[in-house]
Length: 293
Image (cartoon, rainbow, N blue to C red; front, side):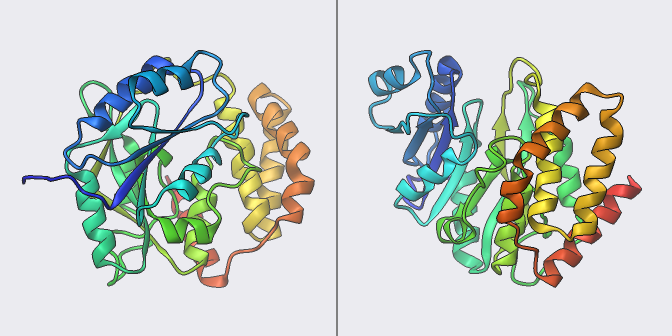
């Protein structure tokens, strides 16, 4: 398939102190046949990232809020974008040639589609991420007006969103900052009536280096519990917290997660908006499926 420049999708990238990786990613994005406009949101890098981007990639729109916003830095990029669709990359990921055009075609054809979760290929050999199989086997099934199985989760650097839907749902919540932030956005998109589904023909390429960042598992556990307090019934949220507290007696990462949860819990309670019953039913169905694995 021949792909020509496509004006429908902007790529938003957040970064912090990974200048060389980011420049490599920007080279890959610049080589895409779709020629997407690219917005980089720099989360207060101190390694010369903004200066390098301005010097070596002047065609890229560089936004520097002056502090580390974490995942909500993407919200600034989306607000700045002027295209109907927005794709997301991290500073170690980019898109397979033609995928952004395929995603835009699907968003054009499916008016309720708010976000599509792409297939993720990892590492130099482009091996399938295990998440792909989980999304493809989603127990939520297919809807007639969506191009793939419905999901309530995705990988942030492998998603293409309808800008209108993303902004209506509020984007990424600052309470979570970074790490496992996608589920809350999927909940909010679905609660607003938008569809979230997996499309394996749209492919993101992920080249992580350096392994799991220190403290990341604790942050992800903290954010899973916070997401429950923000949107799920109190019994579900309490269950998450009891399990975390029990693990904290012998697991330092769980202890760190629990402390982070307690620190943010008052703010989460002030922002609490339980899911509509149909979305909560879908979330419970996924809980049941996860418990069986």
